[in-house]
Length: 278
Image (cartoon, rainbow, N blue to C red):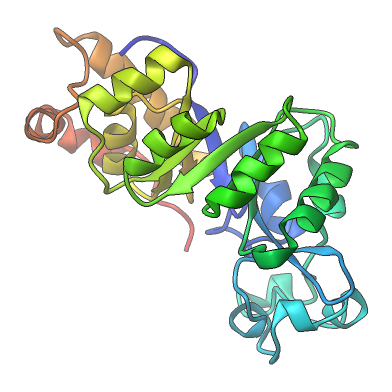
């Protein structure tokens, strides 16, 4: 491990400080120094891209209904912040265009496309249209491999990543000619797979990091970026881990047994880092 720059990507914004996937969460993430914000988009009934994780609006608004069956006018009447705290009452479910405007020139964007189904091409065109107004680096992600391949085929110059639970996603991203893969934190990534990705120039992101141990594990895999709920704490934690690894022969090991042995040497340092706001 060396003094490389590891991207801090705020998962649904600063989602422990403000209601997820709202402009308040994205602004806090940018203020906290995140390199990029991650967000989820879903197609509305009237052909717009709403920034929301779930297929239903119930968890974050208390209302009933599926995003796919709701128009933008109806979405604007919902309170997407009150559930998190009184200070955020009245926060709306934003559209992708609004997040593009808020982040443009201030942070990168990681746009996760949720379940496009049979409307993949329409969703791809809407994402592209919104991002065409964005000043900064953008990555389009999806668990839907067909969508990721379609988007890359339609827009070869775009950066596209495949989301996956396991390291199989790295192989699939390589085979599809994509730019990156984003894999789950708790899924082992064999050294041979990491090396193949590195040799091909494939970016590797790890999700979702929620602890100091998680940062150490992600960096031990050679992650180019971490998708995290802790953007405010991430940079100092990453810098510490990299500096500590640089002082060790061979740096931070990648295999699980060696990683655990390495981590025990630094585990006491965790107490120095501030705990996230809850």
